[in-house]
Image (cartoon, rainbow, N blue to C red):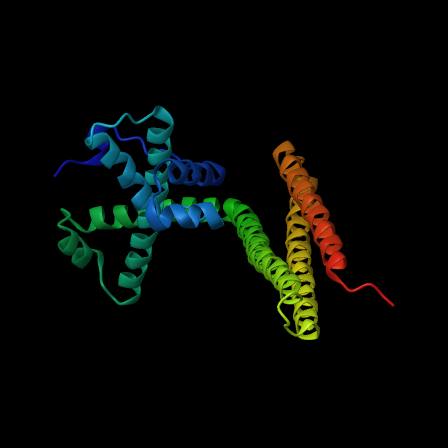
Length: 278
């Protein structure tokens, strides 16, 4: 058995939580495919760390060029995973001690030379676990931000999809209105019932007006969700003064303003379908 000391092993420190997050984002944007690509595009959900690292290795083995940024991101995620695994093993050592399993028994299970070696490994793993906990505390605020931002983005996307669906229905109702209007004109020369045709055309106008109102309402809901995103980014920027957060807040605010402008146009369309007051 080769001892770690004989290899002059230097254990790297716990990676910065921001670096871990950036590494996940980079590898997901570069290598995600299928369902994982869909989750990334819609919800900014990154790939599992093991899958992201495996994608880099698979690309290399397939003869594809792998840039230094991807290699560095994979190494960061590997170190993060190694810390998590060591922390888990430290907890197993704790469970062994609580269950009355002495270091001689642990050494026998792990094929270590003696109880001192098993105890030294337990001490090493506990120190690694403390590193993991410290990194987790630093990253908890960032993870909370990411979760809130993703939730707001999902709400905005959902509202936008509802608005798109309503727009399709509005267009369909408008086509139906035009068809009925043409049918009404044609029926006047064929002895058809003009009153019934007029009623049908009026109903089509009402349907088109209601569809346009639903489009406007969906766009306004999407704008409200985007405003919430902007407000959260402004709140976080107040504590960090990060220019990137300010840029994101401005982008969300601008998008919300455009949604409201489009909603106003659909409201105008809705009004044009309504019967004039007599």
